[in-house]
Length: 356
Image (tube, rainbow, N blue to C red; front, side):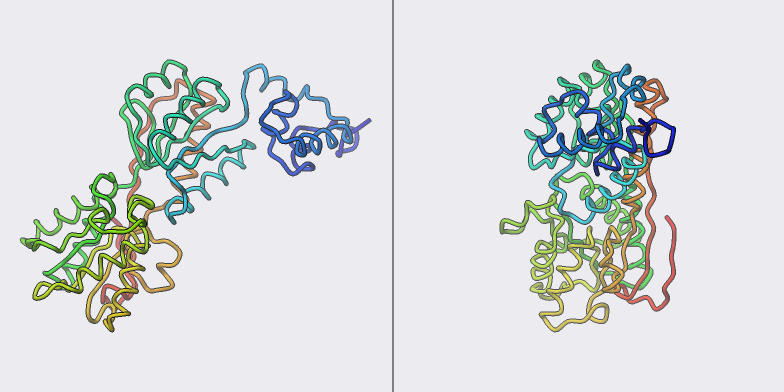
């Protein structure tokens, strides 16, 4: 019997393609893993039988005890940042013929549970930890077990990491508004305990200080100071918190800002809605600058800070694969720079780009 390519024997990649699964799934079927559903197992075994596939081609990988699977732990991924990041992670993972297990983390207890399971059962060859803190206790366990780990949008001194230069991006956004002549500026941001929110606030304050501008009380609104169930979603970076925060700013008498730096594009969309409902125009009555450059930002003409979310996901996977193949590879901490994308919402007339 021969495989699909004439006299050449069938490969695991052909089996996976024909069965519509990843090679990690084929590997688990061959190893009688309990993780596979009966339907998937039956489909893969049927293809193996049809192609007369002999798993000797996997011998090297099996000898190394590789699962051909990686895990990604991230906060509940409904936010645009996580959607774009996940696209990059998935594409790079597929390119390496690996399976991806996703864990949606809604609180720190969930994170610790899945980290512990990954360490104890060695179900995966490596782990991506996204936007979540790594405790020193778990850091020591990862080192002891020698399980490759890459941090994304968070960092730890002992592990590879990819972070965005949030402070520099926020500083560039506010500098741009100041250059346009604004002196009464406000900021709408996420939860105060969120690391990106903290760094973007630091950049905001630094730009004001350099320009000799003071921030009047009431012109900084963080999501956790608002009421409602939505304040907990995505660390407060969501449309409703932007909407409610702008409502508060519009109620200020005498110190209503002429420009607002909004720490996420999705919040900026909510802020724009609140302004429109109040009969105010962007940027004529108030200028806005966001952060992220999600797809919708271009459609509404939102000036924003672009962070390469898709590329960051890809690069994180590439680094994790490098560590899987060479655990002794030198540690890398990559800080990814942002870019100011100028559109209509800030009041600037030209469509240009400034890199920072």
